[in-house]
Image 1 (cartoon, one colour):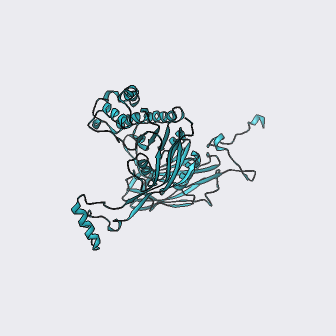
Image 2 (cartoon, helix red, strand yellow):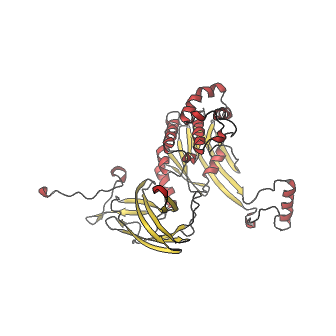
Image 3 (cartoon, one colour):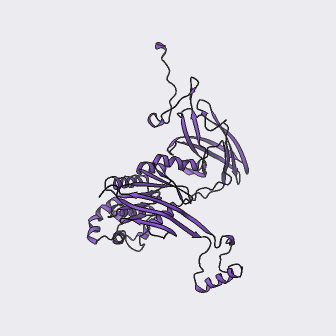
Length: 425
C-alpha cells in the first residue's frame, strides 16, 4: 500500500447541540412541555434554577470542519477548551453523528476517548480484551496471538482476571491503551486520557504510538494540551478554535499559533473575567490583572531588570502565598521559572510590584504562565490560580544594533559574556 493512501476524510462537518433540558423522559412530560411553550408559559418539567433563556437555543460545537489524513501520519489536534476537539473525535469514532457533512474512514478504528470507554465493569480484564477485539472484527485466534503482548505492555498481569470495576483509573488507562495499541486497527484515535497514567507509562505510550505511525504505518490522531508531547509524537498539527480549523500544517507553527491565542501581546492583561480551565475549581485567590512596566513588549532590553505590577484578589486573609512566573519558548516548552514567596494578602485587591532579572534569556520571543500557590503538607504546594501570561520579545543591543540570536541552534539560554583573561589582554 502506498504511504499516501487516504485513511480519513472529513468534509464540511458541522455539529449542533440544543441547550437546556432535552425531553422530559416520558410522552406525557414532552406533551406538557410542548403545550406550555405553545402558550408562552414556563415549562413545568424544567429543573429548578434552569435559565429559561437557554431553552431552545443552539450551540455549534463544530462549524464546517474539513481535513484529510493519510496512512502513517501522526496528527496532533490542539485548541482551547470548548474548541471542538473532543466533539470531533466522538464523530470520528461514531459515538455521535454529525448534523451536516461527511466523514469517511478507510480502516478499522481503535479509540480511547475516556477512561474505561468500551469496557464492561462486570467483566474481567481478559474478557474485555476479547470484547474489544470482537468489536474490531478480529477472531478469537487473532486475539489469542496478541494476548500475552497486551498483558505485558499493560503492566496489570496480576489483575487481568479481576473484574475491571475494581481497577483504579490508572489501571483502566493502562489496559485500555494496551488494547487499542496492539489490536489490528489501521487508525488510532487518542484523547488526553494518558494524563491519568504515571510518567513512566506515558513515555511508553508515546513511544508505542510513534512506532505505530512510523514503523507499522498506522494513522494516529492525538488530542492533548501538552505541547511537548505533541511536538514529540506528531508530524502535523491541526488547530481548532470555536469549532473551526484555523490552522493545518507544521507542528511548531501550529503550536505557536495556539499559544498566541492563549497569551496576549500587551503590556496589560485583565484576568477579572478570564475563564479558567475546566479542571481548575478553586477561587479563593485570583489574579486580577498584570501590568508589564515596559515601553513595549516587542522590545525588552535583556540587560535591564523587568518590573511587573500584579493585582491579586483574596476572599479572606492569606499568608505565605507564592507567585510563580514561568517562561516558555515560542512552541510552549518550559525554559525557566522565578518564584516569589511569602506574600501576605488581605481581603479584597492586593497590589504588588515585582522585579525580574531575565538577562539569562537569549534574544527572541517568549510567553509565560502565572501561578498563585500556597504551601501544602510535606513540601507540596496547592495551586490557587493558574493563567496564561504575556507574550514578549527580548532584544540585545550590540554596537548600537539589535543582535539576532539563533535560538534553535544556539539555545534559549544566553550565558554571561566571556571575559578576556588578564595575561592575554
